[in-house]
Amino acid sequence: MLKADKELDIKAISEKIAKAKGAFVVDFKGMKVEQVTTLRKKLHAAESEMKVVRNTLAKRAFKGNAVQEQALASHLTGTNAIVFAFNEVVGVAKTLAEFGKDVEALKIKSGMMDGEALDSNKIKFLATLPGKDQLRAQLLCLMKEPSARLARVLNTYAQQNGAPAATPADEAAPQA
Image (cartoon, rainbow, N blue to C red; front, side, top):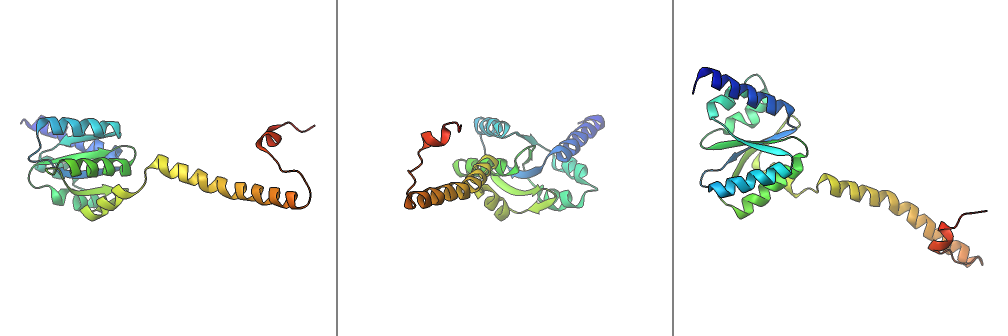
């Protein structure tokens, strides 16, 4: 590999890690080409990218950033790829964990999220968390429930004091 090519690879890794919200070092030794291709497609759907890296070039790309060196560079031994999570880190962790259940050859070594180093146990915990869309739905349900309970309580109180029960059609009718 020419020195200019090496410098381009180092620059590309540095740019991707700077753009990414998180990154994971995975060992893919023993995986078949079809499995790697399937993993890449699943990661692409999760707005992430997997790049097979040379360990020495990746370590040079991480120099100068203590968190990256501690979280990622220290685990760069053997056959490695770096998975860059550009959007939702939890979704990428779930994708890697689910794929790792099906393909035992995939090993998640370490990771990094929001400037914090993640070991394999933290990554497994991260994979159990709900995704962004599910959290939004739960938040909306939490926000809606108190007002719905208040409406039911007021409706019950009104019925006990002789008012007719409100129906959804009554609530939608315009008031004159």
